[in-house]
Image (cartoon, rainbow, N blue to C red; front, side, top):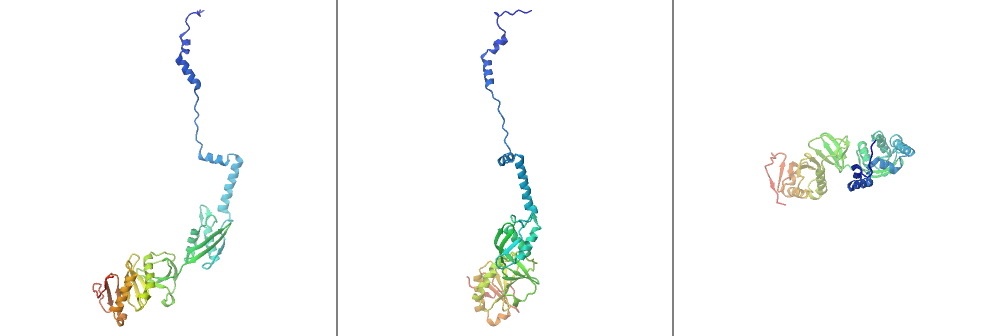
Length: 319
């Protein structure tokens, strides 16, 4: 049996608990709080929470709504545009309805392209032009729910006849080929004839890159009667889409070469100067061509002459 004398010194281990350093550590331990790590909520969870879709019945309503939306967009015909009213002249409602039926067979994201929510003005215009190239633009486009459409169109104006080889086509103000001419007789057409010297094949609906030549032709058409009383113009010949030159065939049979990059007014004044002062009227019928492409010199040639380009026969004053 062990005897412990209380009057003796206490064990060192008990004295360590009373030290100030230990008491300080103990106090800090009492104040310590474990930090809680907050995991950020995902966007989907916040979205569902905001809509209150976490409950089963609300999720069921959402699923039912999606099913109905899918049905009305893809399977139902309630919102497929079928009733058409056309304002003004140009095309008939039946022609537009035929185009809409073809769009119904095409789908975008599983939705028919004639769906009231998907059908746009540009989409309908492109579809109409595929079937009816004479349509230039849609001037009115108004949808009426659930499946109605009111529109008005502008048709192309046949301003020119385009000749490529032995084929002839009607050409509008935008340079678009929109109709093939089965039989061409100059006396039957009031439109100006534009002949393509390259004879490149074209297709109905094709937009030709001839914006600059068309602008030049329009200026010649407007100014020729005032500037050139000696003869009329009969047709134009384009030497190529990238060529800077254009040729005018006159009513007397000879041709006139113009430069597309120079002023129409200046070249017509030079032509009038030649015909009025240089070339005798009784020799007009024997002319082969007049070349006005140089700014200060004009060449003219008769049918029975060598017509070499370096043989200048007339010098015009500077403009």
